[in-house]
Image (cartoon, rainbow, N blue to C red; front, top):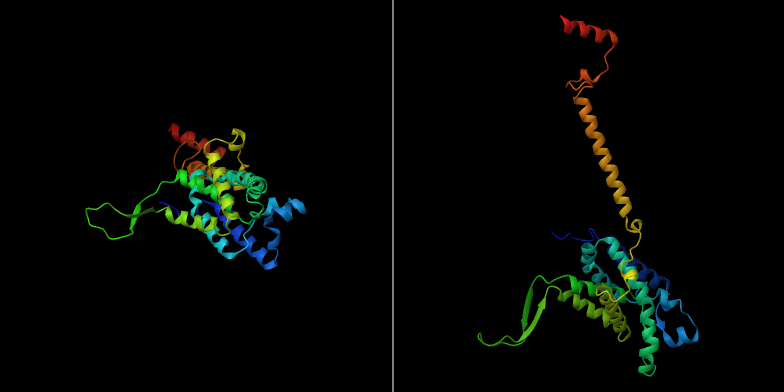
Amino acid sequence: MLSSGFADAPVSRSLVFGLVAASLIVSVTDVKHYFYIQVDSHLWRYHQFWRMLIYQFCYTNSSEVLFAAMMVYNLRIIERLWSPRKFASFVLLSYALTTLLTPIVLAIILRPISFNKINYLPAGLTPIIFAILAQYHASIPHIYKYRLATSSSPANAPFAGLTFSDKSYTYLIAAQLSLSQFPGSLLCAVVGWVVGYSWRNDVLPGAIAQWRVPGWMVGIEAEKRREGFEGLRRRLEGESTTAATTGADGRPGGDAGRRRTLGRQLLDQFRGAF
């Protein structure tokens, strides 16, 4: 049975809460202008390359925050499929790659091709979300399909309409997110999708694809320690119960478990002789 909410998905929960909190703080403090990138002014003229490190930390409008939170919530199934440690490793790796690739593609390829018209890279977690979406597309099968007829037709005529599945809702939200600040948001989506599929198809170097975050970052060692203490407690409780019901000489009874005095031992010896 599929768990509801963020059960067994601590990394996805942290992503949603962190994204909403960061976007809210940025909006309240009126520092949105630090999180998007304009290649001409920010990178080439003022050399503000630090923007490449922070542009994925938040969104600058509420609709994108809503769609991004919905996407991460729908994609939490990937974390349950992989384990929190592998999922956190993939998210950090996707962040590192898209942080560099997206601004570089915009500045070196798209901007010259468009004669400096495409110059803006919006803020937001869109590249990482689409990297996870690539795993969702490849790993999660659809459960059902349904059709929407575009026109009425006779019963024996071939079907004319659109076919959807239960995954179409997720793709619809993703499309809205990728087109929210076109063309920059679409570039973020494409780069994230390419990074996700490159990781899945072993295009990236093996050392990068197999890297994992330390277990303590997702609470694995704490859980193992807790399980060890719980097993030790159950074992000690079992030994205490056995000691209470069985004496030191192996005979059942509460008195047999107590130590006997020397006089009691001599009395029992002579009693056995007669």
